Image 1 (spheres, rainbow, N blue to C red):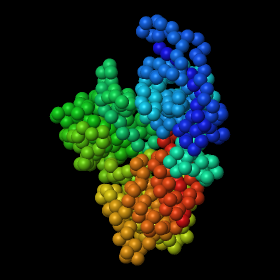
Image 2: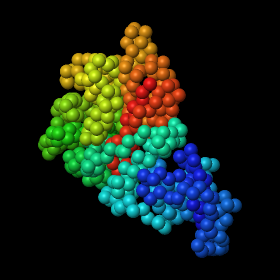
Image 3: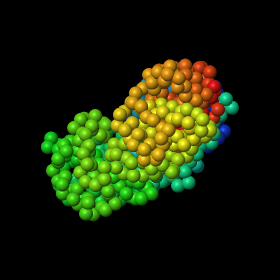
Image 4: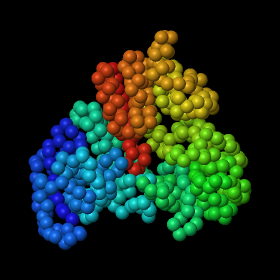
Length: 512
């Protein structure tokens, strides 16, 4: 085993991933001298195979898996790992925190990056805490429970700052970044769980998540970020399914694959969907009857058939077995009826803040026309409709548009209309017909906006462009395109939608 030490080589000016960067708002940041410094190991290290003693020269030796390096962690990566630098290569160390100095064993060597695991923490972050969840290190659902909440917020704010520096070329005062909006109580916020069904290592039925990169199922009973009603119902359903003799996995004669539970927080009512490889599977009717008898808070039970081998949870066909076809819930003053497969934000408390920011950015007076270009089930469009003259939502999925139209009727939003199609095709057609939006709002998937849509926005030239994003990297890249098309960024507001994870959402206002 060889041990190497290096502390932050290179100035990194203008390069967010370069060594030596530090922002004064980031806790525990390392020095930003930019000097190349290599320190010898404090003592010779024995080679693990033959016992030979060798002090490695970090400037001359190429790293191999198993070598140990000493790394100062600069920031949190997009997947929650600590990121440091060694010989101008980014080093990704799961579990390490900004400001920490760690001895790390190299696990992977690529031309421009290294991966490593913590062998020893030489200098601990003041933000390091003991995770609340007993299976945190195996489950993979959360990435930052080992960091206190103040540290998480600072790290997520830094993720947004670094993304704009790297992909949009905006640093320091060039980026009008507002302080991140967190939660008063960053636990028990998720209103929906999708739990894989399988077997525990020692036998017995388990509902949970697969360990990252494996097919080992981790039972997550009592999950600290799930709504308590969801966790309690999941544990009861697990016991009832075991008692009913329900097979799990992907059996040829039909088996339970996934249990999906969603709660309406204001009422406590639950919607249950059993995803199975066949509509009728052994023990299904016994299970449904037991759930009806023992879990009165469940008001809807459906079965979804998914025979495929892809990682997608749902198949195309869903049938109501008992109860109401929809779960009714609220978001602010809006009512929503959610079918089993309908998309709905997972953190209602933070969603209200997010949508209020979108409304602030739109600056509506009642006279404007608005296009919601990735409208999904219409939540943002319906949020803005009372303050606009007309809102048009565009979505490629017919089922989502049907949900949006139904919820518009439910809430009396008569000035909101929804269309199936692609925004880059519908927008030019509408402009030719005399409809030119004053505001365009987008809330795209993690991959960001379609390039054709950005070109269309540049041609249509709305006065305000409101970008709701769940991925700082694609947000910054798309903003660079719009900056080059004549827009400027008025402000960027990060929102912590998913505490204990590495995810961060943002609302960005761009104006011409």
